[in-house]
Length: 70
Image (tube, rainbow, N blue to C red; front, side, top):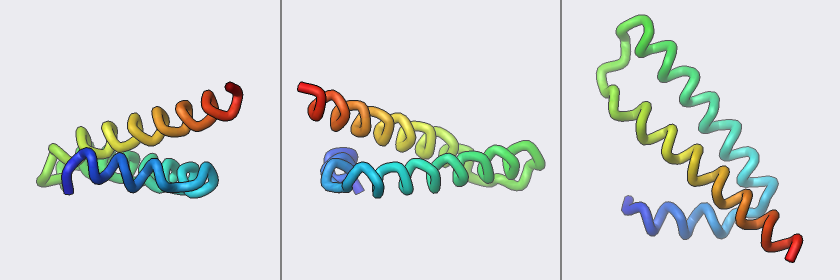
């Protein structure tokens, strides 16, 4: 899936759903880090992808809260 499509899907989510997605992504990142530390992770690029997904979610949450304040 392309980045624009992912962003569109994330922007359609409510703040509650975004926080659930954020928690799931943080757990996924933790699990990937543990696998990487124990040398069980074969696809190291997943770490970068999940970190970027988390950053996108934080950005969208910030945009929504800034939009409500205006």
